[in-house]
Length: 519
Figure 1 (cartoon, rainbow, N blue to C red):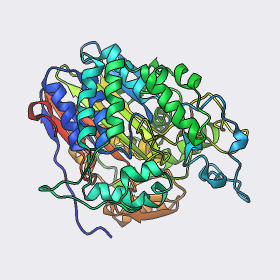
Figure 2: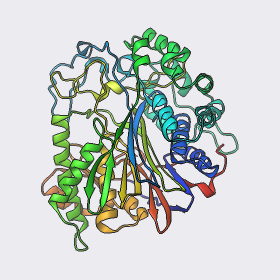
Figure 3: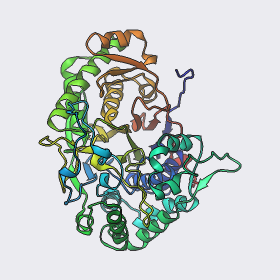
Figure 4: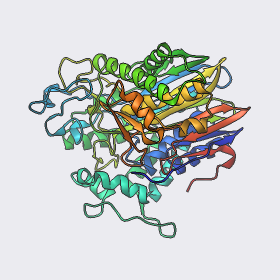
């Protein structure tokens, strides 16, 4: 049991800020704002740096979504740069393990976990195309300039501190199976030793740095159609992947109008289609129908309403749309607001922690395991198929009020993402909580068969939810991660305020006026 309480204060600024899961990445993005860049510039730089400083969560080997709301016009658009399966994927290559049928909460496993790890689990990555498309449409920076901070961090190397060592050690038995992955992350098959402030343990990512330098010189499409594409494709096929040069060359991200719902006095904008956004709107509508919150509403009654709305939404989602229930997802979310009030919510992922556990030998990229997002059972709405995108849990959203961006929020944590975002939004809108209080408020998670209740919520909350659902009281621990890890920025009193998940060790909000060059 966790015996300490961690609190983080909100950060305020009139000049914009970046909220992210790593302080170095947030500082890199805030420096962009300080130098006159906008929210898209800062979001892309932050995401690229995150791929170096916490490479096991997200990166150029993955994919994601973003929502952007213009601070001057109020226009909202979304970008889908999620992963896609290879055209030649054959469902018969992913046979179900014996004596497993699965249900809407628990899909069956695949023989040898071919959809979870190794080259057979890799989908075509969309991050490079997505970041470049975002800059091209809404950014002010050049692609080469946006890559500079990530190149510097890759050349220097990511730091092995206690949290990095914990992240690596939890997956060490799987990482050791791939020689390139083991060489990058392990020392003789074990997690590397931890450095200190006087003698930091840095692990340079030389091959990735060279790849990023070429991307800066040749442009983002080189990743899909040029020399880097040839390196990536050769690495993949040598390892047994069916991803082809044609698969890489045909990849394009997609701009779409936001799907918009209404909650109380706010318009809620999400990524349409195969994201967590439509399910968030579904749960929001169910919550509105279930109850009208007021000052007299107890935490226990609110928790039960959340549980019912989330539970019903997940049953609909997993029986009509499909989604992976096994293996915890690990993701990075970035929320940004610039001095003009433009907000960006960007989520990028490798899917599982360390993705496929494969580092490409020549390109030096840690790759996703996007095949795990498909339902391995045949004849399901989201069954394994070639040349398509799977349904994803990522759920970046922006709330607007009277045509002005009000809140940008998202989270990391697989199926726990939209339940977390829903509860924070409800705390703000229904109960008038400050952003700081909303982030510290104990939550539930109803994305698993047994509903988890934060032990800080007290016995009455668990007892009330337990009248209708099986419950388990758990701590909001660093590991295992029982609740999603959100990051948000919000308009507040003529300026802006930002918050990150209190128990995420290196999460931080960095204001543009406090930014200094990241190092």
